[in-house]
Image (cartoon, rainbow, N blue to C red; front, side):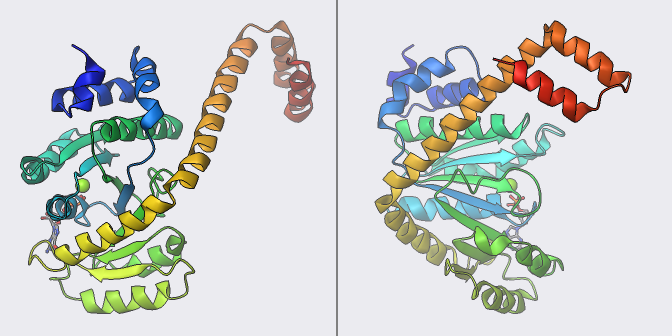
Length: 304
Ligand SMILES: Nc1nc2c(ncn2[C@@H]2O[C@H](COP(=O)(O)OP(=O)(O)O)[C@@H](O)[C@H]2O)c(=O)[nH]1
Ligand SMILES: [Mg+2]
């Protein structure tokens, strides 16, 4: 099987295989990236973020159908922080998202296990794989936005923050720095009471942001606002395409630094494991005859 050739043809099994490879940092995954890297960095990526249960998966399902009607070929990566605990969330997402799979969207759940660095590495490379397979834009679903979890806003070109009425802490969450990240703020579940009020509060608050983001209301239940949302996304995708090159350059800078720092960290860690000097200073710190700062400085100076 020629994985690269199959990927180029958009074969789903090849895409699934390739993403698993980069996700697990398997042997062969670096070789794969080497082969597909050259043409990468052109597809626009859209992060859809917000609290669990906000309706992100349902919304993405509907929106991707509308985007495809506009002529796009959409793929979805769902980063699921709960998947390693229950495994159920992945299935839930898959079930809800099958509809859009039928309409040509590729959907994949990714576990967010491991260090943050490992997640963003897997994410960057999964995006490259989907791009090579012909997808543009690529939607990334993640739980978060100022809460905890994975911060995808540094990896994607556009960020959509999803809120719901009736959850009480929304405005607090927005005030906690959210104005910085959103290009679109969506009040989803607009069929529920309190939606108009939340829309007004978000709009008032967002009004102070330099980015001048859009605030919209959607309901997947009563099928309102989805077409408008997809249209707005389409416009933003086109405008982001123009600045994609500079963005890609600064991302590659960040990625290369990440890789080097990680390599150096591992290297130094291995050195310390077998260093007699380190063992000697550690003993002194443990006996409290030397403080950790002084010991740390002394050891660091000896490292080459
Ligand atoms: N009332 C209402 N419920 C919705 C709407 N969109 C999604 N839901 C429901 O909200 C729950 C969570 O949806 P899901 O898409 O899994 O949210 P996610 O965790 O943000 O991905 C599901 O039970 C959906 O059926 C909506 O517009 N209105
Ligand atoms: Mg979801």
